[in-house]
Length: 130
Image (cartoon, rainbow, N blue to C red; front, side, top):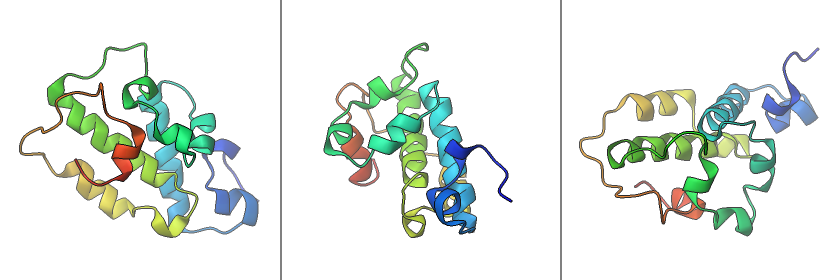
């Protein structure tokens, strides 16, 4: 018997009853996106692979009820968003491990290099580290 909320379950668990450690990574990604977006990201996750979603601006995805992060914090927000998007990948083999996520989140950045979220697109997050 599966316990959990359907929208937070990894596709391989919800549809094929396949349980792996990557199921937890998927759930972590959904919760992280929800925190960043200020709402449940179900629709966002379902359209994420589309080219239309890839051309979306990062600033429009973030919770509009709070001010955009300052330049100093923008790098960290983008790093967390990048990780969350990787966590909700349909393919469990391409999701990061929780060890990798822990490493990325706990490694301090030496200096920010992102000047603004204004021109950053979702496709930029998939095109490598910033």
